[in-house]
Length: 106
Length: 322
Image 1: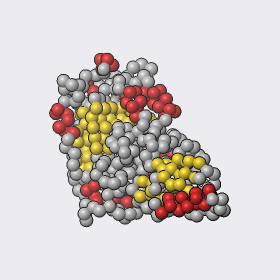
Image 2: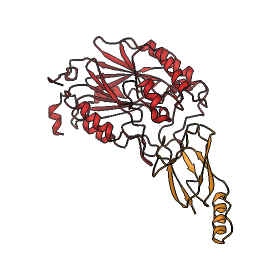
Image 3: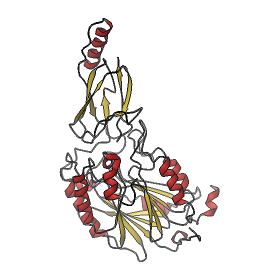
Image 4: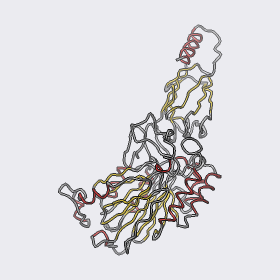
C-alpha cells in the first residue's frame, strides 16, 4: 500500500508539473504470487522483484515473452527493470504460468 | 464410442469403466514407492519404499521398467538439505528392485536451476542404476538457452525433448510440456509437437500398449496451481484408439492416479521433497514442516510392470508396413 501511496504522490507531482524524480519500487514473490499483483509507478521507476520462495521464478513480459525477461531467480535473488514508457505491462512467471502481475506506468 | 469396436476387448463394467477388481487393486497406494502392474491394461500397485521394502517377485514373462522423478539437484532448503543423498538412495532402491527391468525413465526436474554442474551430478548418480535411461525435461531443466544443454545431455537423439521408441512390444512416447508456457495457462505441448505425435501414432496397431511420459500431468490435477496441460485433450484424442494407454508424470511430487476408459494416469513421487495436495496449502511449494524422520517416507520411485496374461491386451498385432 505504501508503494501505491508513493506512486500516487508521484502521479500528483507529475500533474502539478513538478520535475518527476522516480523512486524505486518493489514487488515481492511469496507463495507463488507476485505482491502486489498490480503496481502503479511513475515513468522512469526502477522496479525490483525479489523471490522469497524456495522455488525459482522468473519475471517475463506476458505480451511478448522475448521483449524482456529476468533470469531465473533463485531463493533470495532479485532482479530490476526500469520502466521508462507509460503504459500497462502484463507479466508472468514462465515456470509457473498461472503466476501473473501487472505494472502500470503513468 | 464407435471406435471401441476396433479395440481389443478390455474387462469393463456396465458403464464401460475398468472392472471393480481392477480398481480395487489400484487403490492400494501407500508407502514410499510403488510397483505398478499393468495386467490386461488395468494397472495395480504394490509398495516399494525408500528405506527397506523388499522387491515383489516378478511373474514370468513380464516386462517392467523403473521411474525416477523430480530430483531437483541444486535444491538446498527445508525439508531436504541433501537432495544428492536422497537421489542416491532412490538409485540404490532402483538397483534393489530392478531385476527384470528393461529401462529407467526420469520424468523431469532433474536439476533445480538448469546448471551444468547440477546436470552432471544427477547424470553421474543416475548412471549408477546401470539402466538405459530416458529423460523428459521439467521446467527447472530448461531455464537457460531454451533447454539446449539439457537436450544435448539427456535427450541426445532429440533437440526438442520429445521422441518415441519401442521396447518389448510397448511403444514409449516422451513428451515435452514445459516450454513456451502461456501466461495464465498450464503445461504446453504446442502445435509442432502435436503434429509429430499424430504422425508417430499413425498406423500403429490399436492393441499396441502405449506408455506416454511427460513432466507436467497430462490431466488437470489442479487448475489453480497450474498442474495440468492446456493441449492434453488433443493428445488424449489421438490415444483413444489404443486399448492400453499409461500416462506417467511427475511435477507434483506426490502419487496421484486416475483411470479414464483405456487410459491410466499416474504421477510419481519426487526424490527431493514433497509438495502439498492441491488446496491444502497456500502454494504448491515444498512441504517444509515435516515431522523429524518423515522426509524419506514422502520420497520414492516407481516400478511399472506389464504382466503378460492371457488377456487380449497381451497380444500385439502389427499391420504390414507399420
